Length: 280
Image (cartoon, rainbow, N blue to C red; front, side):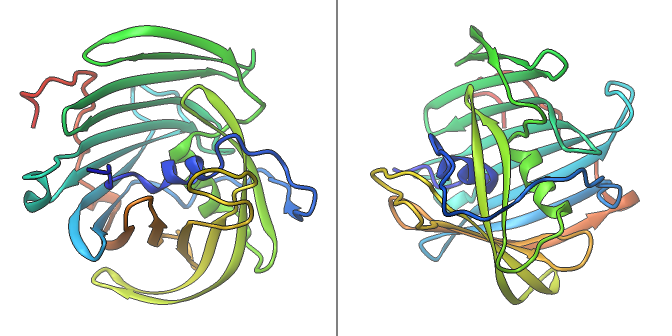
């Protein structure tokens, strides 16, 4: 069965895998845009696949604590399938990002994938002064180490979403930035389009639509044809209200259903770098 509970920011990067700049693109060059208005928050999304409720995604952000240098934001994402879908294919994925809050450059990104019988753990740390990264990967424990170079100010799949939330978005223009995923860095192009008014159980928002544009040909994606749409609220803190993606099998929809902020944010689940089946 196709893995359908996928964090949308990772889909964003997947759309741009092996992408190179296209000459016809008119892009908005990134500028420093501090995310001072993004603090502690918890966003819950209900995920549907081909119209059926498939699970939930919970994204929790926290300001710096004693383990992280001041000026950083830590975001944890947990994706779980519903009880019904878990009977056929259970997903319990976790992601965590630590990034600089003034320019969103990634400091650490890790993930724990548990999809059916598939298991994988990964932790990547970024050394921006030296322009390098170190990536540890494995199944039940870290087995392989990979190192390489990164471009200046590179983002990760989660900090990319926060970067877009903090940008000045002008209808008709495009946004460009560099992001890291799975040992490689990619140049990401995002078209900024007119949105719509969206109402969910969490509220009602006027939105702007962001559509990453692939600049390569592949089995799933065609050059200039977007398979992913992200609707951001036009008012701060620019909440991601709706995310839709066409997948090789069916389509995915993640709708914002709950928002907590400040003192109302519960502590996120601890991130354990183990993938044993005894975890629930």
